[in-house]
Length: 273
Image (tube, rainbow, N blue to C red):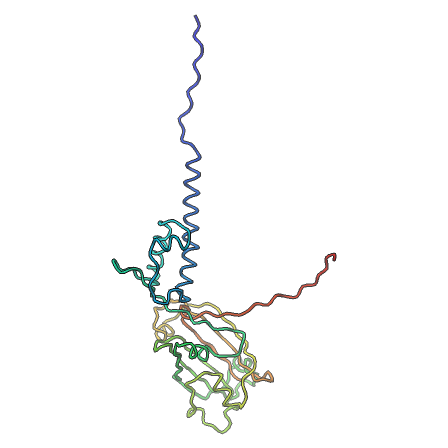
């Protein structure tokens, strides 16, 4: 008697579903860490926690709608960046200085903004010299190469800590009969230029890019060499468009943010009405 064939055994393989869920879970966790870290880091820098005490872990889980593992990893990252300090039994505290928010849509100096908001900015001239303009500097100022200029080096402090260093170049002619070396340069360049010309400055052309602090800049700003800085060059004009100052500055990137409204471009509507 022939026996009925037995069914082939089902291969014992792990279900792909849990594997996919596990991978998806890990990817989702990673993305959550990224955006929560970005958002919380931004909030810290913009003073979202004015008393410098962060909410509890449970409160942060609820605030961002993510897992406990995500919050703990974000806390590790922020701690490694030196933005927070976690004290057992006391809580988590912000160590991040509030960013200074400076608009770029008006010809105005950062120090003029911050001195109206409680943060105290002071400018100290460290070097003043009359020199001949190089070809490049002359081109920025619209003068002839070899014309005499005033080279001014300053350091700006915020609440007593170094924030930026600047090298400025001004045509000697705008000083008239005044000896540049006896002039009071310990103030905003816009205030200085207004006194020299008798009129408020006009437009400012400005370029900003990221840079790394070399040993000289690092020593001035009190940061390790290689720290991120904002490298700014600008030309300040009179109301009639004559350039009256060209400057180069380096600022601590962790203390300032620039803002500007980007206007919509005009587009021609060529579609059907």
